[in-house]
Image (tube, rainbow, N blue to C red):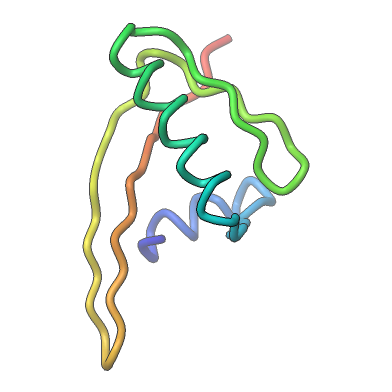
Length: 82
């Protein structure tokens, strides 16, 4: 997660990274792809909390390289609406 994204998450009181076995990760990605393709909202549970991602979410892909490691993040961002 980028530094600015971490700061925003920390301000809201949650910044969680959760590992999943390959099969669960693939299933989550498949459900996400289906929701994106149909324009539907997406609901996912991460580390025990249900997250509701609206269809209006913004999508970005981030690549980071530092030292001997690399990271690719698929990010969905949105602002809660009343």
